[in-house]
Length: 305
Image 1 (cartoon, rainbow, N blue to C red):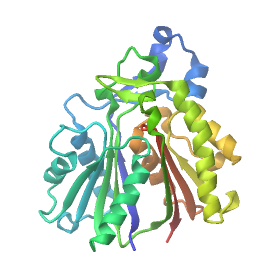
Image 2 (cartoon, rainbow, N blue to C red):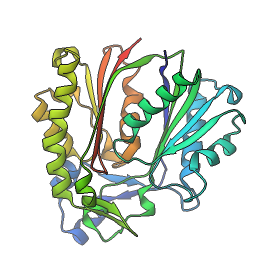
Image 3 (tube, rainbow, N blue to C red):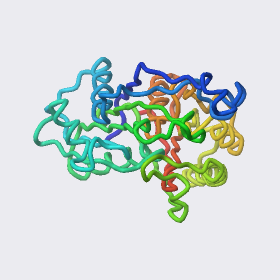
């Protein structure tokens, strides 16, 4: 059996403050604090690429736990903003951190649901191939594609990266996954040259689909709210997270919200929160749920070993 052993993250030091944009976008403090929930966005160094963010997250992992590079058998990068169209970013990460030539590498092109998809994918791939240690990276620097004059996106998205050590010495294991897609509405969140988001359409999709999806997954495992310690939701915006929580009918303390000082980090938002929650003694079972680009959604239930 494989599961999550440890998670680490990297956030750039450079920050873009939304308070400085109030006049430009005709917004106020209430909009910043209660609608989007982003005081400032983290922005990558100009010279850093997606692979560099992954490597920096990996160095943070090494501060927490020793990792022998020659024992890593699988390296997966979840990103929609790779270094290049060709080759896959995971190969570049592989080279930069010096993994073994016997290590499998591939990318997953998914956004806000990407961590849950990635978790399911890497565990299944590794178990099928008899592997014991792997790295799951998330990095989607949207600063590459944002139009800074677009109110719907310029105030919201931040850069960052995470890495999850998948191992047979796991501390948390997944017990179920559930997925869904509404591809007919893919244009509501899309990038040709720059990112376009129909905020109202994405909110309506999230508010109607995600709570129902989570409830159905829990019912299939014969679980109710009393069985769940935390709900780790993709940090789309504060209003979205609050709406899902209310429609699930769960207490606020069960739904952490942490994007205030770095923004919506896309596929990295769930593992950034999960990193803090894994070691808390009061947590033994958690729901993860990501939703967005696609339109796509993915949820999981994980339990402490």
